[in-house]
Length: 176
Image (cartoon, rainbow, N blue to C red; front, side):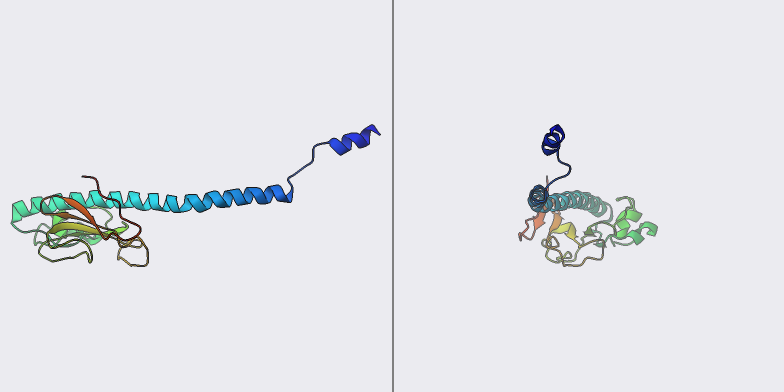
């Protein structure tokens, strides 16, 4: 008799199906709210990185102009490493040691030094910019099948940073 009573009130092993379903639903709801915010945070950090690199490229291009009386122009790519300090293409910024060489093609943005070309980054800025970056979908060359590819940053000849394309999701404003 005592054995039956103890067996009846002994702790059960495992969880019921209802308990498991409730836990899975709670985890699903938390993930539904958390994943979009995580994605936005990652994109914002990539954008802040790009804005700071554009500022560096813009300052280098301003120094290049002081020395050469012309702005450098073109895309910064990995093959700029072996460039010499001649001409006014963007690789001259690296060849003349205004910029350090880095993995330009592996970045999620496409970086350009802007000379006399108008609107080189597509929707990015005006003819007054001297450096810009536009968002790629993955490493260069840029493709445009992501909602973040409308994000673009530029620096004008006065050293003022700006962001362009106020579509959803909005690009974060670069810090001064």
